[in-house]
Length: 362
Image 1 (cartoon, rainbow, N blue to C red):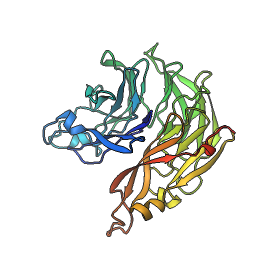
Image 2 (cartoon, rainbow, N blue to C red; image 1 turned 30 degrees about the vertical axis):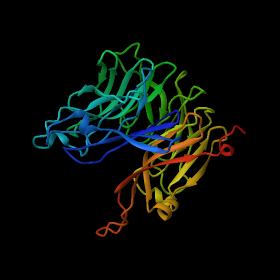
Image 3 (cartoon, rainbow, N blue to C red; image 1 turned 45 degrees about the vertical axis):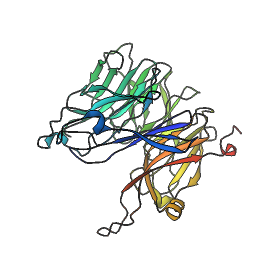
């Protein structure tokens, strides 16, 4: 899941590859009290009978609607879940959690039949949930879903959906994406005011992860070792340059300092191996188009806590830009004796303070 910072709190989830009886857990961290608490787990919410499919992951973005509900969606544990005997797979879920009341509700089950919902973004004002799907049979390409959260119905769907992520332009409510799993490709546009087509536009970006629209009206996207800037109003894009500084370049979560709109943050090496580069938190300065490492978490975390931070799929910046949160896949047990290498066995969360000297407008 791509986590979210709201006020002094950070929301994130962890899961696994168990199938068909998977489970995923949703957490809240309060930076004022330094308290981490579990808000929910999918099994307790969905109450599926034993042996019947329960998702192993909350893989989507986490977005806060103007109604006070956090919206997210679920994803399979292992692939080809529909082939599991007795799993009775029909599709995945859209859920919501109310921050103040602590209530969790199912918004929809299988809004598109036989489709998992790994990628998403929610329009907080229009209350539309957008998703890129994954076929439960693992045979067909992703679909695109626009779901009306107020009316609880499918607004629009299409057989050609986003492979990895979606761009949301808050100022217009439009969605942009493409179906390339790797590298740049021309985007298509979805306009909720005209929900009947997906016209292509003359702008090309890589799209493994994207920021929200920043104060300058632009969105930033990343794919491997390259960063792009996309302007939703003229629908133009430009390549800004490389992101990685060492060996690892797989980046799946990108967020920005929304107060200044100047600094991007990311962690290369999402799927493992980040420790080989020191498990770095990287800051990208949009004004100078330069990058630097704010801190190295390896070997510090290993030496102090016995934990190797190996990769992160969830990063969020506090609204004032003073703190970056990250949820990690990592290792505590040491190398696997059979393969003599580290493997993921423990999830962890870090809250990293960004000194004012590193984020002021100079």
